[in-house]
Length: 342
Ligand code: UDP
Ligand code: MG
Image 1 (cartoon, rainbow, N blue to C red):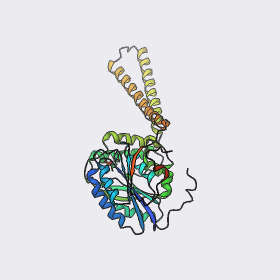
Image 2 (tube, rainbow, N blue to C red):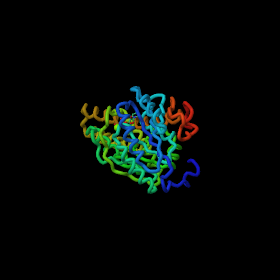
Image 3 (cartoon, protein in one colour):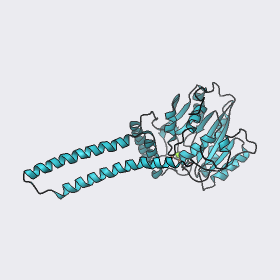
Image 4 (cartoon, protein in one colour):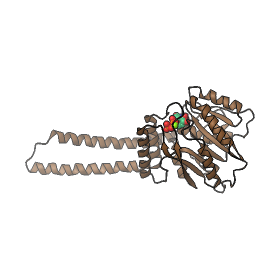
């Protein structure tokens, strides 16, 4: 844990301080202009609080980086962090947070599903002394019923399995104070579930209800494959209950098998020797299935241990584009072309 952080106080007044807005971008060319205009309007509205907008281009191939480079050319408060390939939403957020210089950092998606205007309410709460202000989705417009249901079920399973207060129906749209950001930067795990890590950090956290809008343009970059992986990351990173469930399932099936074996022996002594083919097959398949499930659960954890032990950098930065006269000095480690998160 970085030293001296606990002593740091959330600023009483935000006057003279800097707000960093981190925006992960993956093929969002059609939304960027509108996002920039709307967000900029909001940020210019905040009295006495300067801002920087850090677009993290997560390996887009639709020209998003060129659009952002134009913003950089016209606005010294915009920075582009281009990753060397697509690393995924959570890593893109991490790269942006690492590079942020602000006294507070806001993470917001580029697709305008999270209305930038809500940032003003986040700032109010931050000024009141909260370290984390996270958005809670009151409604989710424009998303398929399947997505809304699966998300809702996932958050409830997570709550049941994890011994930590990870807010239900909250995404990564949030404001974090500098001290939370520093603690987050100290967490180096690879299969990142950022909202869980932030909950784990603690301090004063508060949720704010907001209406999640439709995507302004384009399509979701979270296909079901990525969503399932993300959900598994969330559960495995914060709970070992699935492993315990594997053990319990093992005991239960052994018990059933033992009871059945007893009944077979009794039947044999009573002279009923003809056994049904179906019964044998059902038992065989059932036991095989349970074993495979348990192996799969083990595999999920072992795969993640393997991932951690490799010790690779979390991401590689291709380049950073910023105004010739940067308004703020960058953290040393973010200044090089590529670096490891050490
Ligand atoms: N995103 C990213 N890398 C990815 C996938 C998504 O940086 O591999 C960004 C995307 O551009 C958007 C945010 O993460 O700004 C959330 O993605 P999306 O809107 O597709 O997810 P959804 O809201 O549908 O869950
Ligand atoms: Mg979205």
